[in-house]
Image (tube, rainbow, N blue to C red; front, side, top):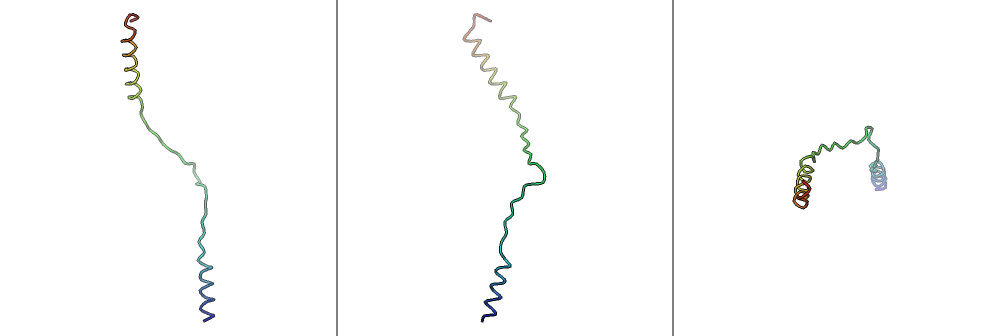
Length: 59
């Protein structure tokens, strides 16, 4: 009985989990190919239309 308990203890000690935190060997790159040209253009066109409407006499 003592031998079985000793064997179980040795097996539990050998199965100890290990967690390693290592930085990546290459830098992390995030590629954001976002095209916001259309949204900016629409906002500028709306703003220009509002400005022309408010200041009709200067154009």
